[in-house]
Length: 186
Image (cartoon, rainbow, N blue to C red):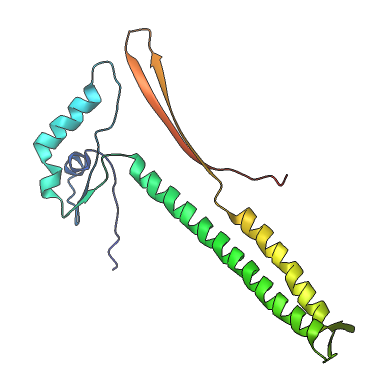
């Protein structure tokens, strides 16, 4: 008989396991910043504090994972990875354009100055070395345009919204977004 594995994730999970009369095989504790929970009486935070004092989950954990205190740092890492990938793609395309310019120029110059009048036959069409060089040079403009389109287009914003309830409590909500800005050819 195969043993099945169950992953349980959540706050106060040791209390839940105790109520279900179950034990964990592996316990992972994720240490991070205290959540901003706004309740009238603070009961949720009090419950989590009692749970932490009673069960001491960090000490019982098989593994402890630290998350950054600044919750935006993981977003920053994703944003940097996006910008890095887009920049590399744009550089690769720009490099292809530069290579097309170099090869096209060499083929064009050799065809224009050489005494060889060799033509290349492709699918029923004949093209001279000069013509081939011109075509390769023309494609460099396409490479450059593709590099322009592949550049990182990125916007990041953070807003804070303060709201008040009828009972006098207030809540500050942070809204953060990272956006890919779509470019429109002008």
